[in-house]
Image (cartoon, rainbow, N blue to C red; front, side, top):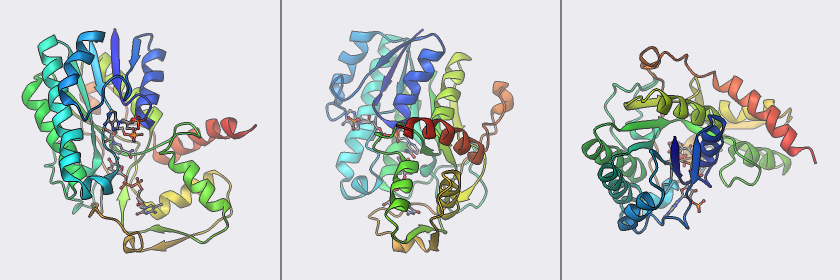
Length: 288
Ligand SMILES: NC(=O)C1=CN([C@@H]2O[C@H](COP(=O)(O)OP(=O)(O)OC[C@H]3O[C@@H](n4cnc5c(N)ncnc54)[C@H](OP(=O)(O)O)[C@@H]3O)[C@@H](O)[C@H]2O)C=CC1
Ligand SMILES: Cc1cn([C@H]2C[C@H](O)[C@@H](COP(=O)(O)OP(=O)(O)O[C@H]3O[C@@H](C)C(=O)[C@@H](O)[C@H]3O)O2)c(=O)[nH]c1=O
């Protein structure tokens, strides 16, 4: 099977390329040079050139605060480009897997959101991701939408390596603080990628929540990272108002799935197990 991954240089995209190759499928790692999402009309050229059986659309404007300040940009990159890709894929008779976000819910719940819960985006970013979902659902009857949790992992050079960012912050010796009023589902990008590939393999459709098990505050999450790294640095629990953000991010972004039984799959491991497994690999990367 030939799988095209957009955003292949990103945190999740890079893991997806590896998971697809581990499955023995052909992977096409598409990056910005292959298609600039700021030109939605060029999606058709990308699909016509590579003729994938399945396209996993990871590419997005993922800077939540930038989206809040530039709503037209957020719509262009996260909604309009997705709609153009969906149309090109439908015309070509292939499949689209759209990567969406745990952040599309109101955040008012304190119980993990399920696929059956109604999205109510609070930020421009989340609205643009959810509108992307709606464009896909109206265009591609055999769609698969995968909402993922707070992603971590990747190489040391990965711009969004949250573990490496916290390790470096701890090394500065400066006091660390983290929000104790924002909760989510930390998710190892490798686990998310492997699950997405397994869902493609069984031709799963509809909406899928893909996240490691467990709900944790940012503060507990950062403490868990430092413990896993055997760091003695301490993290002060603070209110999220200490982090000046343009976007009113939801308080609660944890997700879990009600569909594992449908798929014949076990829930993903806990975020703590995933983090421990990642740190084992990470430590190997880190040793010179
Ligand atoms: N990270 C997280 O915690 C979460 C992520 N998600 C979703 O998962 C997906 C992957 O996220 P993640 O791996 O963290 O994202 P990254 O920011 O690591 O990667 C995003 C990718 O999109 C590409 N991209 C951005 N703008 C454009 C553009 N204008 N044209 C072409 N490519 C572009 C980037 O290219 P380049 O490398 O050149 O910059 C990058 O490779 C996204 O759809 C995101 O919305 C959902 C929930 C949580
Ligand atoms: C370490 C830390 C950072 N922050 C703030 C500082 C920084 O401005 C902001 C950026 O961190 P993040 O990028 O992880 O946060 P954020 O931009 O909210 O991450 C988002 O990613 C996108 C792609 C999504 O899809 C969302 O669901 C969400 O996961 O978080 C806290 O609020 N608390 C903390 O403990």
